[in-house]
Image (tube, rainbow, N blue to C red):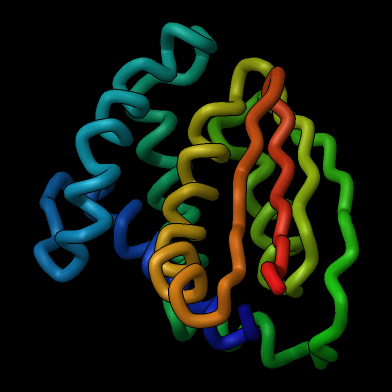
Length: 170
């Protein structure tokens, strides 16, 4: 996936997330909504069960802030300050905090937008939203690249570890 495709994927995630903060389903992303909307809404509602501090309101506030980062304009303004050389990705290990809903999302975004592989240890109290968002980011890639370039991207969730693997099939 090149930088432009990564920006597009995260921008799509921003559109997806924003509909929850505005309490209005976006018909422009019907495919994502058919696959993820109900499960993500249920996950937002259940966060308090995993961490008593993660009320629906605090999760929606975190999602609102993240959705502001995930516009094409914001992402392009951010990445245009740096030069990226497309090369073989490195595995980047990240230990994510869990004191605020999705507090580690920016770390995950920073690794993935650079084209590297994210290997993360999520806090046990804040592991589900980040993993779910990663699935949404990867969905366009899975639909597009798996059929054209025979690239498989997989997420392996084991004991709140997220490992993003990219495997080229010959």
